[in-house]
Image (cartoon, helix red, strand yellow):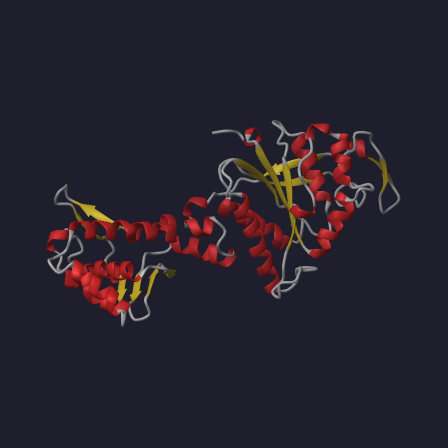
Length: 366
């Protein structure tokens, strides 16, 4: 596998609040690392006030420190970083958040950070370096956790370390090529040549493989994503409510078409009856048509079409197609957590049997 610095698209992602210095300090440290990681683009997740400070301190044409950093250290090239790459967190009402104080605002921050992380990690040809050094503590936590959920092997997580007394000094953004003298709050003079800026890389457990495809693509917020992953670690439990047209696996609701819901209900019933492993030859079509009738209700056209197709008995093609479609739907919805709910195999062709391996006590069918 390629090292992070060998990818053609290299992304630095940060969260910031009132200290936009985090961006330039991290860029400086990345440029001086061994091997160096030179971003091709920079993304920032922040509040409305954080965005204002970042634009003024980093991107302003008159003295913007991002431009000054690139001028002092040409090895950084020209990574793309402009207002379009500053992602401002929206509050519960949809308006940009000035700050993050309430539980509802924290939830919005978690969702915004998760969405950006999910989107940037969709590109398999990109490597991310993610910094949790800036912003409120909850923002750093959410970004670190989102990294654990979505990061790939080529991605890295770090915290930038700046030596005292330069840490949090309002005028220090990076060690300039030509050292400068700064004044501390107690009127001491300090020399930027003495500043040390390094990165502490943070190893984390990568959980991306445990996320369903839909969540990996960012089609859920932070709470839903974490809940789905937690469900995959719990004991398997299949619950089917035919009247409500709903199935739940480990507490997670599945979106299944009526025929697949009825097909899953058929297999659940055979497991509850104590004979889960079946071949297509020993299945009475009525075993499927009964739950299907309950699911489709008054849709007589759909039911009569299935009834006509199976009037001479269960078809091998019908059996295999529904098994395949059900497996695909479960994997798409649950990812690796689908394993306990997939149909097991037993025996050899042409007498291969299929069926749910779940114990009866783990199944509820109403």
